[in-house]
Length: 261
Image 1: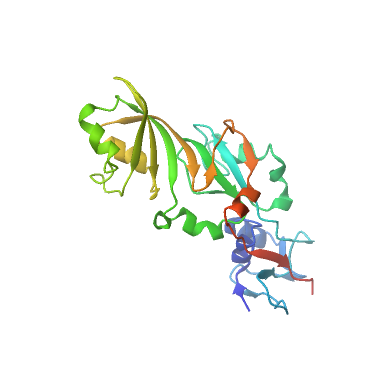
Image 2: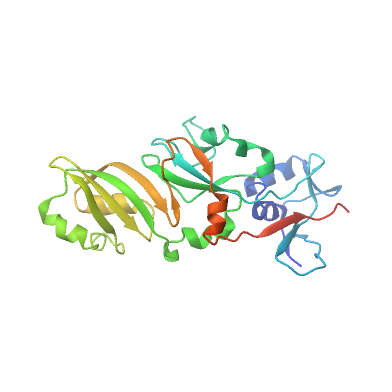
């Protein structure tokens, strides 16, 4: 029988962030059946009474309404440059949530949809969003071996003395990174467009590698993350790729609500 604090339960079941749940508890809005809750109190899940891979959520109520685990979804967002990969910003800068609110998936029945991984504000392109982030920890980890692909504009143009090193895949080694695959898409004396792929995906990895060799990144656009492609999705658009994820072998945990006591 599993036992977690309320914030852990509802985060795992795709319904809210842990911070949001703690606020609900402090405000007296969240109950277990008719019982009030303390944030540190462990809550056990009732047994299913049958075999299978379904997980049962204890009967939590928010403002008297039973919280029901949402169906898992995966969304593809073409993040425009300048948008922060967060759900809110105290300075009022554009964030992912601003675009999500314009879609059908902003409805509360889909739970809390959050970004998978990050893209810094100056970068653009493919960003994955889901209401169940936990199964994706290996996918996001630098040790997971999942390939990312980017289109990058650098200044100055790729120098002749760097060409062999970059095309050999060893440009990242001096900067402390693993293999970085580079193809030249278009080049000139003042700037070049490169196609770069890597599997580590550490914070600012491409920018750090290029800066180590004396290049400035003018544009950085993520084109692919594992089997998921940006395709022809326009900047600011969001599409549902849940079925594509299932075909790619992604398996989500199945959840249901326990009956009210």
